[in-house]
Length: 303
Image (tube, rainbow, N blue to C red; front, side, top):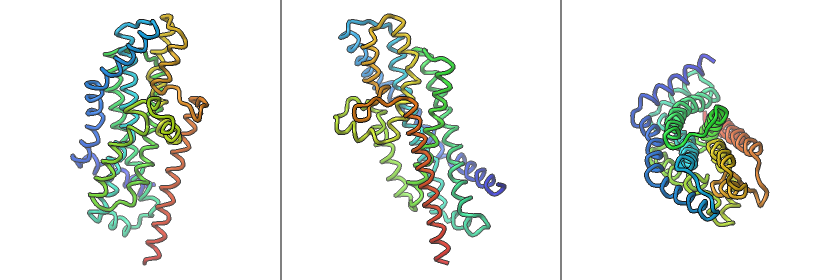
């Protein structure tokens, strides 16, 4: 345990000491919030207003702001929890490039301890940044329309923690075989550009074609985004009901923003979404452990 704690401290300090790696991770949520607030908020607001007008319902600016803000915040956190993890986990690749990993393997440190050190330090760094991003997002909601309860905030934090666990495990599996800066940059670019689309953060899955919706319904990130959506918007939907909005209108809005997800026509409950995300975390961790065990055996065989 002493060796593991030393590795975690070492990796965490190196991560925060590397200004390029740290600021790249930190600026991602900030850029997303600015872009979402500047461009997507108007699109979402017009969509909500149009849907309500078509249904013969009217909503206050605060309620519209809370609905738009909840969707933007959930999108930002869904993307950040994974993309920041990939940035944080670049230390694993950097150690291969600089030869530091070879030095660590020469030292009396088990390969399993080394792998766990990378995972836990990445988890810690990513969680700190994502919790800071969550604080900024909550401040944003307080400005545009606050309808959250203490329970909603607690569940949002739980969702962020689970998605950080998932993002860290996924990044560990993907980054493990990388050994050059070019490979790391390519993977980071692909993840940053593509993950938001396939998890439903940039565009609601309900707007995709039926075939693409069925494909995306197999991806665990989709359900992580929906969990964030549900908890960020629960209070907004409750207020709509209190103001006399027809139940079918509220349900249609829930469908349109992916609070309701369907797997081949069957609605997926929140408890099932948690099970899917938890299962994906366990699977990714198991894959990470397996590749490290195989790499350790190969290294011993090479000796």
